Length: 527
Image (cartoon, rainbow, N blue to C red; front, top):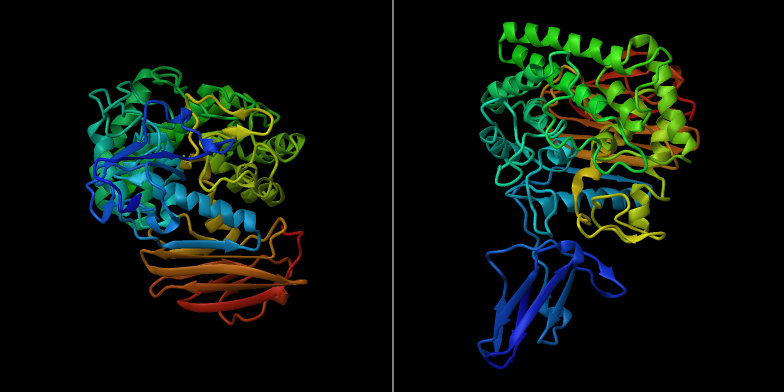
């Protein structure tokens, strides 16, 4: 805060206390643990004095001032975060979803301070690897985080031990143990994401040996290719709600994913021997996963939403059983009244997997759900950032344990990537790097009547959006210079498509640079 004091007697102590939430009108500070979140200023007796701390930062929403009767004109909130230029915007016809996007954005601003912290208010502020890898796709939609993550990855690599294990946090100033599954895998996933998103080959080169060493660390201690040993603190699907995803299902899925990424990265960097080795390793891990965890009816051990999401998202279900696995996942969502159970790991996959497997109806039902547990529940109760846990505060239980209950913690906001990528439709083809070939796939659904997004990519500004007017949909897209795009028009009637004279295959159009406006007949019964 910056406070201006007027005519305060010399020697008077003015105290500022910060909190992120109120309890019956009073500051709720119990969840800050050992963090005092308090600044004190002793007045010098000048007619006008200005106090703004230079050597601390607070994560807060509410301020209490004692010792001075401050007016609104005396108080200015100063937003501090790393200089990551804001590059993306998303909006739609649903005010709640717009508030969700705002909450995600403010959570990112509040936590991207020097390193991607878990939360800015309590006595922690650590660069947790799992949180960062889960949120990185969303973060790169909102802002240019290329150099921010590149610099942090130097800490990640520096924290790797001689056996190849990353730490849970970076810099490794705490939590000296080996990283847990999905947490340590950030050392593989984030460099690959930066390559795909920004075309940053240098970061991939600098991290590559560490990526290989991490996968080898897992393989060396798990020769049967089920990741059950040397799993660190093994957080599982952290803060999942009302279920428990088997830890070895989650860890083995991530083992497979990291091996696959190392193979892909090796191909990019011209290391064919390493690529072949890890391609074979990935195939073997996949076979072990299917043998151990996938039943003949398509069910995945544990039966949780996250178990199905990991198996489907990482390609660990036999082709012939994918439909059955999707049906099991959908049935679990439906039997809970269209409510989620996913924690940190599963939540980023929830809407994308459902939508990509023909259940966009459920993806939208979850997105727009306002009953507990949901994004909408926190928003309905005043949230302006993403909560650490679904049950941080509930009508039926009040505040969760103050031992771990942040109200600004971006992990559960990882759905933001889907808002840009599928709701609005800005994505890139699987073989594209740095958005050289766009894949525009707008996906109307739920009660939305329009949605649009813009994103400044390495190729320039990309935009995609749609609006409904009765039985007609209008799709608007902007393709930057030097890029090409594939647009999948959401219609079941290819003959109704108008406004495009270029190459077309069914409902798929190929677009060149420039602005495009296409109309078609719209039906909610999309294929």
